[in-house]
Image (cartoon, rainbow, N blue to C red; front, side, top):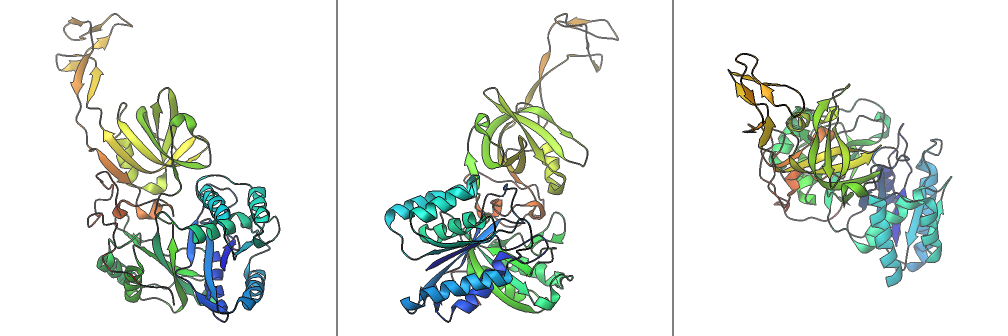
Length: 442
C-alpha cells in the first residue's frame, strides 16, 4: 500500500513531514516500511503553499491483507488529530494506492511530474482518483489531494533524480522556542562530510542554514547524496534532545522544477532554463535587488537577483549587454528569480566614442560624428574597444542561505564547468556519494 499525504501544516506550526514521521511509527503494527519514505517538493511557485510545498509518500508492506482497512483508518485518524484544520490554507489530502495497472501508472507518472513543474487544479486530481478507483480522503476544499496523489505517483513510478535528507524533530514541549544547536559541531560535521552533504552551512555569509526559524517541530535537516553521509553528519552534531528522526528520499536539489523553454514561451508561476543575451544593463533598485534583462529572437524578460542572494548580486552586476547566458529560476509577474546563471560567453568588445587628448570625444549630434573639446579634431565613427571583464564564463549560484528546496547546487555536479560566487566553496563537484549506501530510518 502506498500512502500519499499533503497539506496538513500551517505557517504557525506543524509540518507534514512530522506527521509522516509519527505515522511511520504507528503503522509498524500492520507491516514494514518499504525503502525510504518520500519527501516530494512540488511547484515552488504555488500561491497556496504554506512553506516548502512538500508532500509525503510512505510505502507499507502489509503483513496481512486484512489489515488494509485498519491501516487506512489509522492514517485518517492521525491526520484528523494532527493537521492544523483551523488554518485557512490547510486542506489535507490522503491517497491510498493498492493496485496499479499500467495505464494508471502512466497517467500518474505524468500527473506527478506536472505537479512539480506546472499549476494543477483540484478537479484534475479528483478526476484521476475517480477514474482509477483510487481510495482517498480529502478535507475542506481537498487541495491536498493534488500533492498526496503526486507523491504517491512518484513512490509508484520512481524519481529520475533524487537526494536524501535526514530530518530531526524536536520534543513537543520545545516547539516554538529557540532551537539549541552547538554551531561549532555543525561546522565540524560539514567539514567532515562535504561534498556528500551540502547546504548545512553558508561559508560566504558565515552562518548555519540547516535549521528553520519557524515554530514547527523540525529541529534541523541534513541533505546529502546517501543515507550514510547524512547519518555521519548527524552523529557529529550536538543539540537539544531529538524526539525522532527520519531519512527521506527526496527530489530536493535536483532542478526537477525547471522547464527548458524559449523566452517567448514563459508563463508566470513556472520555473525555467532560458537561453538569451543580456539586453538590459544590471541596475540596483530599492531594497538592494539587482535587475537585468535578457532577450532572444525579439522576446525579452526581466531577471532579478534579490537581496537575500547577497554576494551573488556582485556577479550579476558585472554583466554587460551582449553577454551570452543561460538563466535558471522561477517566474512571477514576468520576472525570473535567478537561482543560478551560466555565462556561456562574455561580450569583450564595445563601440565607444573615440579618444583624443586623453579624453572621449563628444558627439556633435546624430550622424554628425565626434569632436575633441580640447583640440577640435573631428572623427566620423565610433571605435571598437576590447573590454576588461572581472568575471569569467561558467556557472554561478546563489549562496545556501538563499537556495530554494528544488534548486540543484553546483556541488551535485553539472555537465558544464562550474564557478561559484562563494569564494569559500570547498571541494570539487561530486554527484556520487563516497560514503556508500544505507537503508532507512530511526
